[in-house]
Length: 617
Image (tube, rainbow, N blue to C red):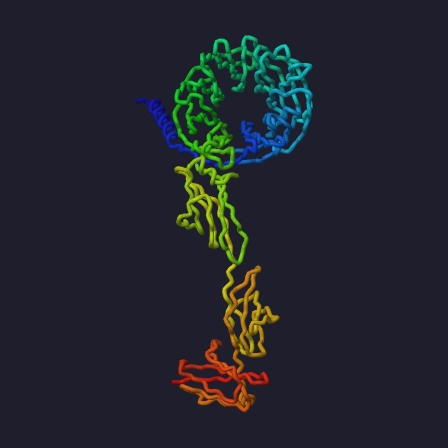
């Protein structure tokens, strides 16, 4: 084998493995739409590096619609539009993308023309006394318009970006059956009708006319000097694919299709074309040579991308093909729930697709969805979001965390294609948390991972927070009580709130002290009772006798003044007491272990004394 031949083999192998290794892409994002209470429809079409979607939402009272704009990474904006009347109060309107990223919207009933800028903000609005049949964006952000009125009956006009008419040409004599208009690569405009094809320059001069072509109904721009034209001869039941030279108007080649109906047509990035008929999909090169026909895809919708790929819809499956008719991948969708309507290539070589709800077996909203398949360089890219109540509260209770992909709930996306779910808390999978939503009952950082075949994507995390305040403790230091909490304290004596909020307070009387801690409207469990120890000096309590001390089984208390008593341990825990005021009491100590204890004596006059008592066995 020669060195050149070996290089060719390596190149072919490289191409083969690059195709074989490209995996079916994940759904990157989804946009949901509802059709209103009288149904509706979705129509999507490509603009310069963007996709616009027209949603006709029929309403029983008045017509309304929404223009939506998308870049490859998602929705730019939804623009609500009100349109009067129409059949069954449905808005009747059309739209055309402009070179500046905006869109021209025409409302048929009111004959109102509106121009929206790249942000879908209204730039201008004009009302005309004629009907706009079709339009095509000029290269300097204006439009060519094919219109119909009383005088003249038909004309072509060039509209500036501000809505003013630059020039108009009467083409009534040329019009038979209305066809199509397209802007040429040199800034002029090409018109096809039943009587032939014409080209006008950007200044309105007739450049050429080709009357040999009849029955033209659609123009598809090609390379710098070519355009494709579809025509029909209904008498002979023939459809023609014609390539024209846009400089001269001459026909480069014609390919007739006898007895076949053209379903969809696209120009390819090699300036050839691909189209589908009721018998299959054809691929022609720029010279007009048939490269292949695939009879597996009769009546299929098709789309192309700038990376030399062809997409086909068949049996609710999207198939990606190379220009050599090799299948790269196939991705199926559940037709019981949604039926794929149309596809459009995205600027990043991913794919936009529109789908309508299958009302026979699936009645849950939304009625329509527009979704994006990820590009080949990042086939697993998915725009996943999770939402939940992240308010910091005292008790988290139960909170539902929901999930979306783009702006649509994953609940509905899962009905379009099979998706696997796994919720995580603090990056650890939660057992059995494998649906599109999760009810959380614990604080933590939550995220969601989804799988679509070989692809996995993880959402950003949200944190569910709960304020947990530990139960405070009280300690005594001389004549002060100290809370274990630095701030937020509230003190209580015998159940009554004290006017103290500091960590450390001085006490002046014996009793049951407690403290509670407050933070952001949350509160802790109140502390255990704490009885501070005030040891009486010998002179002040000389009239009190406790004996024996240390004691073993019994201790006797005598005083010249009637008193009650409490026996507590060193932690302040109440062990024994008598509320009867008497001059003497006997304490049974058999239940208590050896150690130090305190006896609190309360006299009738309110004086309190604390004496130390030791048990020694």
